[in-house]
Image (cartoon, rainbow, N blue to C red; front, top):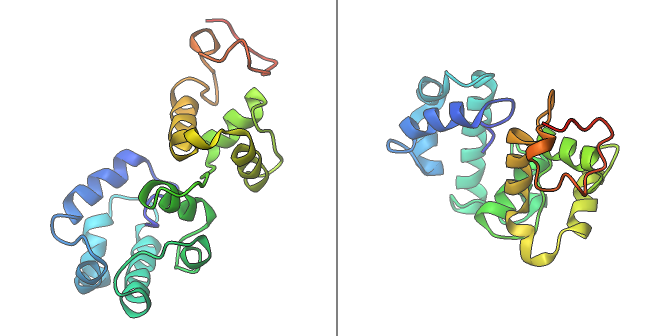
Length: 176
């Protein structure tokens, strides 16, 4: 779980593509040991602390949850290296519970467009949860992330190719 912080999806996917065929359960990852796990994740930034958190998390999962991932935000955020955003990703993606993981892309899109402006990620999360209709909430964070990565990009948004350009409140729009 906590491998993705400040790392690209591509980098995490490369590491886990090698790790998961060898170890894809809490018990199997824990049995690799810290040094064994590091050998799989060393290409990811901050891998030393991330590997330590993963090992600690696997131990807790084995001892307290029968090797399974807990299904509540309260339990998830108690795991080493797991914050609210990661917990929300797990709840939404794995357990299909309504939750909004607000990363830098979603924070930017929400504020720039005026969809759900907020001074911090929690405020944006709460506004998005109110704003997005129930039937779309399970996939909305994926759509918003992709929109922020590829259209409403940080330095030079591609306003002219944006599907919601007419609804957007971004004052510095550039029509491409």
